[in-house]
Image (tube, rainbow, N blue to C red; front, side, top):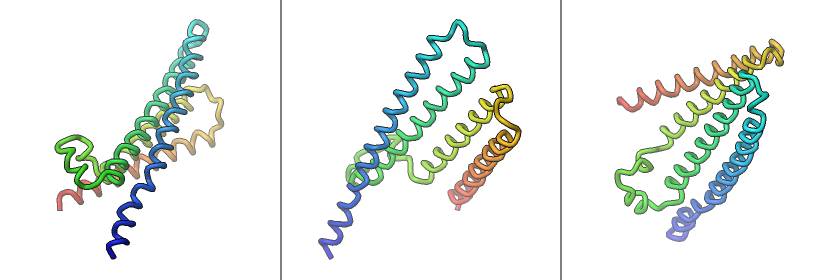
Length: 161
């Protein structure tokens, strides 16, 4: 039974490659962010206002996705890879306060924000998309928003018990 416990406890290290891959994805986002920023800077003289706003909103999307991925990687690392003694040594650090319930709420809120930015970008792109696509993007945004609200309410109710 002791071997099984050691093996089960050691299996948490199997998550480490996933967190490394998440950080690689952040690096890839950083490359695309730099490329988008270069295009905006290069074309700043000719670009019209709405295209500039759409470009900036795209950059904000990159930042939000990267922040969400980094937060998932850090919190997962602290929860799964670190031993309970190492987690206790964090003390009153913000990492010790984030649990999976709060992480899920942060991720859901990030998804709602990203979906909202995508809807705003679609509205700003002068009808290049069709009406059906626009309706579906608004429906998806409302679905994310409703799910976030329901999740936040249920977490709040669970905390008060």
